[in-house]
Image 1: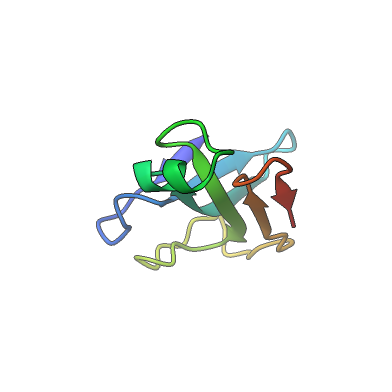
Image 2: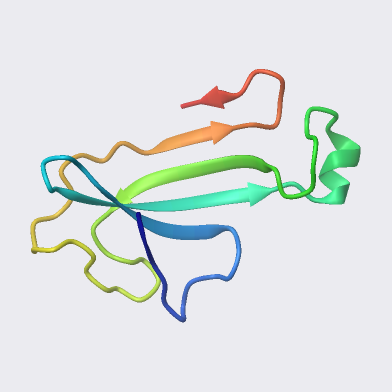
Length: 96
């Protein structure tokens, strides 16, 4: 797994990672997430520790939305856009 970093990306709550499949194909994912704070722990008894992920949203990208750099090896584009949102804030985590 490789990570894309640039000076325009926020320091927390977001990262862009590369996944390589067995057929040699590359895919880049923008992951936006929120981690629990002390206040979150006080307001939600399902959370255990500061830093636990409360929710995350993932979407396939072809370029960095912060600096514009093209991330795929060739100018092909994204094969399929399958965004997902996972909510870990309750007893039954929701994935959509």
